[in-house]
Every structure is written in C-alpha cells, then in structure tokens.
Amino acid sequence: MHVALVIPVWNEASAIGRLLAEVPAGVVSEVLIVDGGSTDGTQAAALAAGATVVRQRGRGYGAACLTGARAASADLLAFLDGDYSDPPGQIERVLTPLRAGHADLVLGSRELGVVERGALPLHARLGNRAACLLLRLLYGVRVSDLPSFKAIRRDDLLALGIRDLHYGWTAEMIARAARRGLRINEQPIDYRARIGVSKVSGTLKGSVKAGIAIIRAIVTVRFGAS
Image (cartoon, rainbow, N blue to C red; front, top):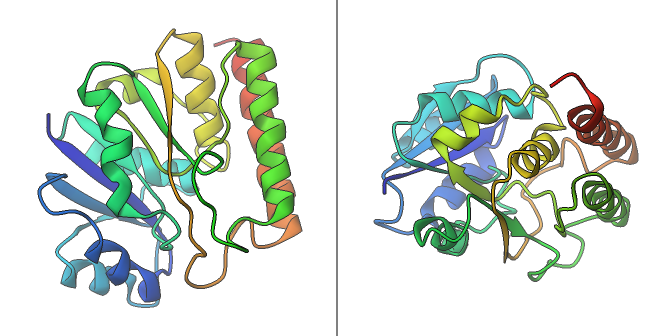
C-alpha cells in the first residue's frame, strides 16, 4: 500500500530540511508539508528538499493534519511533527502493524522509546499520562502516549469525523477509534529535542491550554451527541 507522510509546520525553516533528509528512501510515496502560514522560509526549504507543500485550511494542529489527509492520495497516512523531534528513520515501526493487518491505528509512543534529556518537559509528560488514564477509564483502551507520530488508513481517519481541529485532535482520534472498535497498537519511538522554541509544551501556559482541550475532546466523544 502507498504511504503519504503528512508533516504540519509553522515557521520550521531551521528544522525542516534536516528532518526531510532523514525520511528513508522508498518507504513513502509522497511527503506533504502542510504549512500554516510560515514567514521564515519554511516553504522554500521544504520544496528544495523535494516535498510537496500544501496550504493549511483552517487554524490549529488538527486542521493541518486534516488538510494533509484530504490532500493525500495514498492508502496509508503517517503523521509526525516538523520540528525535528520525531525521527523519520523509525517510520517503519508505525507502518508495519498496519501493513501486516494487525492494527488499524498505530501510535508511536515516546514513553516506550528513548526520550532525549530535556526533550519532553515534566509538566507535558504528566499531562500526557493523565489523558491516557482518562482514555483507559472512559474507553477501556490502554495507551501510554498521545503522540504526533502515528499512522492510520486514510479511509478510517476520514470516517472518524474528528471535530477538534486544534490541540485535542490526537486525543479525539484515539477516543473515536476506540469507540468504533478499531485496533489500536503502540510501537516504541524515540524522541529528540526539537529545533527552535516549542509553540505548545515549551511553556506551562501552553501545556495547560492543550491539556484542557485534550480532556474536553476525550469527554465530549464519550458523553456528547456523537
């Protein structure tokens, strides 16, 4: 099956070239850089590295992922961040269970891999664990991480009807996948210090804002109208 690698970006010119250089040859059929309005030359750097640049529709991380999913023509979608923290060289780990028919959604868990010192702040890590506990209590699904590095069939993703197009995107994806009975698998993925300044987890305020959105997404799917 063909694979599209979707990478949301916003002002990642210093990282995107190095990141794309690590994408293994022959593993993905298309690389889609979904740009949220960069002003630092990110688009030019991505094009120079051979990627396709897609203009993001709407605002938010989830909106970027959805834009890439809709623009892709491949059967399988893999997502990772454009800040260099997710190692593209490990993409086969998240693709293998899908290709083998053993899973429908694969999460590249940082908790199961090796986290570079200082790459994941304590407050972000604790919030992540709290969200995973809530997913287990409300849906019976045991996951250790809500990662940016993940893979799913394109048709399955679009059928989920994810509504949170911001910080709660991944949490809602897992919640809806669990509710639909999709098989969720985790694979260990290493995590590196990002290049540049984090737009979310780098500050306590950003992490709190993201945490509230994540909890709201998880609870809404369980007790909401849909």
